[in-house]
Amino acid sequence: MNVKIVMMACSPALLFAQAADKLDPVRTEITVNEKIAAEAPASITVLNRLQVQANPGVNVDDRLRSIPGFTLFRRSSSVVANPTTQGISLRGLGSSGASRTLVLWDGVPANDPFGGWVYWTRFSPEDIDRVEVARGASTSVFGDRAIGGSIQLFSRPAEPWRVHGAYEGGNKNTHQLSGGFSHLRPRWAFSTQGRAFRTDGYYIIEDGRRGSADTKAGVDFVAGDMRLDYLGAKDRFFLKFDALAEDRANGTVLQRNSTSLGTLSGQYFREIGNDNLSLTAWHGREEFHASFSAIAANRLTERLTMRQQVPADVTGAAALYRLRRSGANALFGGDFTRVEGYSIETSFPTGFSNRGGVQWQRGAFLQGDVKAGPLKLFGGGRIHAAGAQGAFFSPSAGFAIGRKQWRGRGTVYRSFRAPTLNELYREFRAGNAVTRANDALKPEFAFGSELGLDYTGETTRASVTFFRTSLSDLVTNVTLLSTPALIERQRRNAGAALTRGVEASMNQRWRDLRLELAWLYSESRFANRLRIPQVPKHAGNAILMWAKGKTLVSGGLRSFSAQYEDELNTFRLPGYATVQMALRHGLTDQVSAIASWENLLDRRFYTGFTPVPAIGAPRLWRAGLRWEGRVRK
Image 1 (tube, one colour):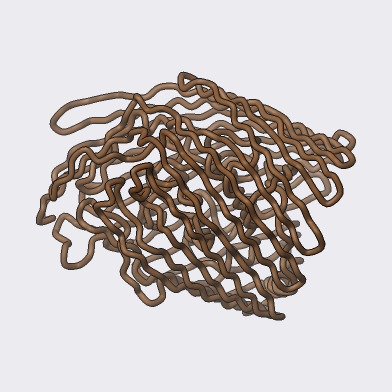
Image 2: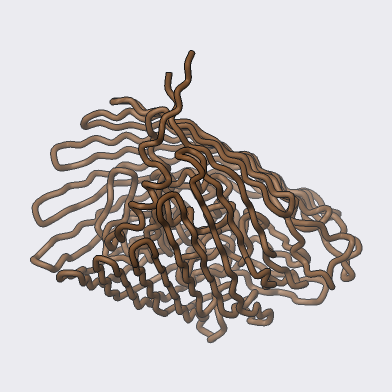
């Protein structure tokens, strides 16, 4: 057998040139799955493949931090953060580890079924084609997990006989190996990819406070997926399987956790004249193990306090039908999920417990829009049943009006979120800060409104949005006890809260040079005027990117103002700023050198109090080679 290597149809040089040549228009649709989108008067940010590559980071969450308002529960990266704290907050709807944002991967929900958080190690940034971030529940299409918005991740499409592989190494004894293959025929496509990562990690307690109980925090993982597509003229279908195995050191000798999971999903799509039908189904299983300890005040010793085993599985399905008519569109459908999970806890010395159960959710929705000249009106509603939590109605309405390069938009909506099995039944510990479960939690509600203006020119794009969201029965971690040796909290419905503010962004291109600026102001407070924890008032990002020929160079600044660790506003986390940099250069048509630096200036910043202050990532760098080509007989 002779193997012939030929140049890729989309070489790095061509990709960079195309990306630098023009700006993408303002996005006016929220993609529901790969083939169906719903018009919405929402604030939507799209990162294409080049923008994802221009933001350094091991996982996708680090690269999405260039979007102001995107945060995990704490400031920590998913490289060291406990996975149960990797829920997403947008626009200040934070305060607990449960995600208030729905994450979809190729149209299939990717939030953890038991707790709502996201395993960011599942997604390889190099194999993501684009990311869409929609803030606010401005459409009734999605269920309760989208109370704060939605994030769509789309895999890179298959190409004929495409093969790729990469190795990166960096400080902290960091190594990453990745590779994949895809092939495309007239009616069929197949793709697979995988990556393995390991690192010694870094200390999350600063030098002067560390003791012999402290070790470095980090993660080792292996993840991959494979997908088979049928590409008919009117019918399309895909079947996909992905799996993850990860092991984490959480910063002390005794505190560790590990996860293994697998998800099988499929989606059918059919064109029916001008209309479209989509059917999606998925099933996932996972098992999470964790150990927790109590740490002596001098941090010289620790004592094992609990071991946890959390098995969970999820089964879900969704049906969508889109009607497209002259001047009007409608999207309607329904979905359901069944989640079963248990927190099996062995506490020392108190004993054994097994808490959890089954959680059913079912919903039906209708979302439509009608056009009258330059004005487009939107409306929708969703009936959602959350098992024992009851049934709820979530309406939405809005408008958009366009004239030449300008587009004005506004929307109002009401949404809710039912507590997860994790919030109801699982205890959590970070250092000496213990968070108790609460099986009496009620759903939380949000009533939101926003008004925005978009401008799209040939070389300039700008957007500004004013928003206001009132929350009732917000689930947050309420402090019961606070001492130097122990902080005890419990998840509770904290009553009313209000978040309001403004977000603005601008993109400017000068030939091969591109500047992106973004800023978020979020005033997020409880009814007693105390700040909602884990929410900075200001967040900003600036990135300058130069792409020409086979070379991409980008540098960025991310800044965050102060925020609080707790709902009492006792523990204040100062603001900080970090500098990032990424470099890619094509050595040949198939081989590129890659390098990245995070926290380039080695700025020390705080990520939490346990009650000892925890610190974020120091300067991290990685460098390596990436090969992409086509191989055929």
